Length: 430
Image (cartoon, rainbow, N blue to C red; front, side, top):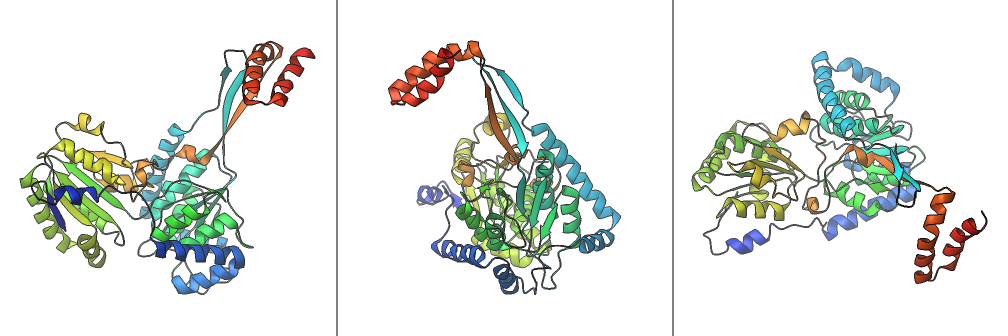
C-alpha cells in the first residue's frame, strides 16, 4: 500500500496524479476495436469464437440464448433462502426506482401554447452483467429492475457463461426476477458489440447499460452513437474519508470488501489523523489474513491501494473530488458541511455504520456507478435513463398569433425566411 503524508516533499506531486480522467490505454482501445469489428462483420460466428477463446465454452448459434428449459432448471436449483434474499434486494431497488421515475407533465407558455413532456421506456434495452470470478446477481437486479420499472418491453441481458456453457442458476433467477426477457451467454466487449450492432441471433438494442472491465467500458465508449449508453462503470473503487471519529476496523473492512473484486479495482483512505491512519493500516494487515480471495486482495493492495494523511479534512475533500471515486464513505464530525462539498462521487455513504456492501446488494439505489474518474461527468445509473423523453407542443389561433412576431424576428436574424413564412402563413390564412 502506498502511504502519502502531507509532510513529504513529494506529497503535492503525488496527490496531483490522483486527479483522474477516464481514458483507455492504446492496447485496450485497439483490442476492443478488433473485437467490435469482428462481431459487426461475422455476427454469431464471432460470438461463438470469442466464447471459446475467452470463456473456454463451446456454443452454437442455437445455444447462445439461455433456453426456457435452462431457466426452469435454474429455478429448481436455487434454494428458498436465496430466492428470498434476491426478492428483498429487488423490492428495495424497484421501490426506489418507481419513486425516481420522471412523470409526464403539461402546461402553457407565455404565448398560450400548450407544452409538455411525455416519458416512455425505451423499446429494447441491453444490460451487461459481468461474470468471471463470481456470479454478480446483484448487478442483474441493479440494472434490469430499473428497465422493468421504466416500462421497457424488451430487456436483453448478456453475461458470460462457464466452460460448460451454463450460467450460474442464482444469476438466472435474479435476471428473471428483475425482468429480463432475453438472456444470452455472451460476455466482454463482444457482448456490447452484439447488443449494439445485432447478429442473426441477437437483435440490436437502442441503449446499452451495465458495468464491466476496462474492455467492456471501452466497448461502450466506441459504440456510442450507434446506440446510446448509460455511463462508464468499470472496476470497483472506494475512497474512505474520515476524521478521528472513524473506526479503524470498520474502515479496513470496507476497503478490503472492494479490494476483493480484484483486477483493476482501487481502494483509498484519506484522513487528517495520524493515529487513525496507522490504525487502519494495521487493521488491513490483520483482517486480510482472515479472508478467502487472497489473489484478488493482494493484487489490489499491491497496485491499487493508497492511504493519505492530509493536512485538514477540507483538503481531504479536495482530494476526493479530484480522484472522483465510485464510492465515498464519509465519517466526520462536520458530516453535513463536508458532504455538501463532495461533487464528483458516484455514491456517498455516511457514518461509521454505513458499509458500501449494503449499497452493493440491498439499499435501493443502483450500484452501477461511474469509475476511473468518469464521475466528474457522469452520475450513477438511475431509472430515468431507461426513459425516452419526448416534448409535446400544440398551438391554437390565439397562441400562434402571439408567437408569430417573435418567430418572425428570430427567422430574420438567422436568415431563414421559410421558417418565418411557416408561421405567418397560419396567421394570414386564418
